[in-house]
Length: 329
Image (cartoon, rainbow, N blue to C red; front, top):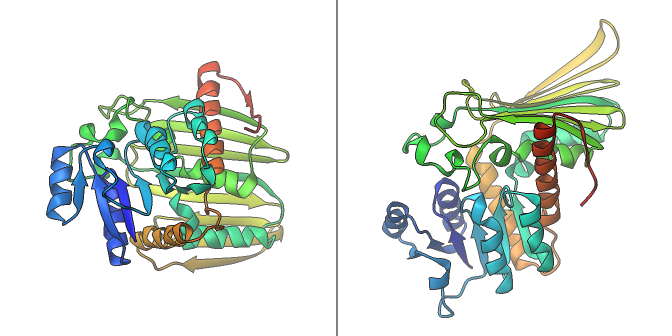
């Protein structure tokens, strides 16, 4: 198999290395001269632009790993060539732009929300499914880490996350937890939220986002930021029979079940895995998706579009300072 990877930044490089270990050869599209030189030194065939990839170069699938501002245009280019597409999250920068892929065979799109291969999230989802905590009535999703710590080898001001034009910022890039809330509970009825730049980071984008998702009998809080130290990443869900927690930094899940004050049982599980294992397992699944005619993507384009819908609703709620109704796309 031979894949074309568009973008050789941190995530593009990670996918290329993992695919190489899995026996897949890769070609790279990268306009940045420094990153292009790195790809060449790593032994890849490299193009500066998509239009340089002519018919003499064959490839089985395309991975879109560029900044979000280019995702939809580049995914459309691949779909026009009838290729399966791995599309990094978020799928675009807003709902209207992202909707454009509806005119293509979007069943060929596989969206890269990695927590679906995280053993802690899979365990949490299983516990919820077996009704151990009863009916959920409150959940909290939190991610916080300082942007300066993400890529120590480069100035964070040069990273696309600092650029509004390229699609950076907390709301877009940390939309993992928005997607997980949809996966666990579906689309909410109403949304309240705030998007802001509040730290001393020298960036153009938002560095903080807070949202509340209102369901029938359930409230979900989501807080995402790119300025916090130390790093935190966790989910807590409280239900009629107990609570479950998932701490992705400490790699522990906890479960407390209780039917009366002082009458409860608790359980804690420590997970042992490397972060890159999650990415590699996702690539294994994507390879299977490419090889199959009928396999449905673990995270579909339509799910990615639902995330974009909620992102736009959060933006609207932040501007209007009021609850916003959510209509299914």
